[in-house]
Length: 350
Ligand SMILES: Cc1ncc(C[n+]2csc(CCOP(=O)(O)OP(=O)(O)O)c2C)c(N)n1
Ligand SMILES: [Mg+2]
Image (tube, rainbow, N blue to C red; front, side, top):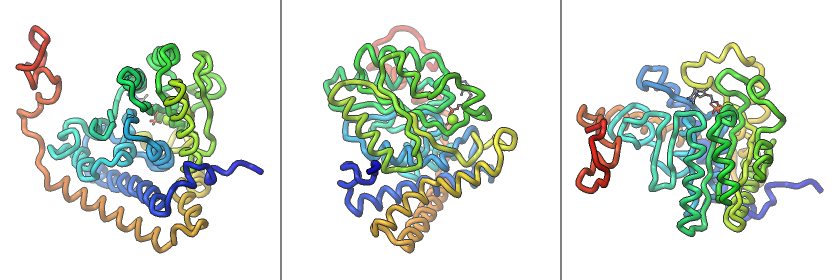
């Protein structure tokens, strides 16, 4: 009999409420992104903004299996991860609007959502820059003797950055509890994987370092992702070994809000994916099939999420911009806390 991920214990152990919760989280991500796009188009959001539509199963599947001492770090396409770790939608929308009530006090924007109290270390704009930082987080967990791992997300384009390979070397050499999640949405801005990436699989690049790696073709199936991530977590906890999971997925919108998305892929390709492989539709069908969810309930969940995103916009609009004085705060810890600082000399920001 072929393997059915829905029957994996990590999934059968989910209660009916937990399954509905997982579905709701995916819907909240989609509705938040759609509302963000609208606000961006209306001119309320400045700077870069990269949305996650189409990739929801990845953040939902991987983050929903994490334990209390697991940490995550990602790149600039970070809204979904922030919602999944439980950050408040108001503080995320306010951050997009550049308001002081935002999670990064309005000074980070879309690419720099951040909340260490939720084990979420950002939101990073330099492609691949988060990959050695994730190795550092995993090293810290090991050093402190915690039963935890660091999930470090990167895109298919980021696998070509040099620092990733330095991090892979140390992760294997030092047996770090580190899981690289390659969110392979098949494009690095306007460059397709075949135009930009040599070799066969992206995960396979771990082989030269002796790192376990696999490709997950069913990247729109939240059950599959939960099963494989929990296996990688066991490898991290019990063997202190790193893993690379390459998850095949797809983004519906342009790379960022400024990408007209007309030159490097066809409309038909996008429509085909939406029609046949949408992760939310798929999970909804599964849950309806399991008699866990009714179509009416699913509609109500969508409506509630839309209203929540609308309230977040109202919150953001009513919040203030940071003051001029605040611009130089929260840059270096030592300049904000000079009496506790241990370094000598003058900092740029003082
Ligand atoms: C070091 C560096 N080089 C180039 C850029 C410009 N840039 C931003 S995103 C991006 C593409 C990355 O694609 P991928 O890793 O596949 O992530 P995705 O956007 O698909 O999530 C590039 C080249 C950057 N931010 N940092
Ligand atoms: Mg990509």
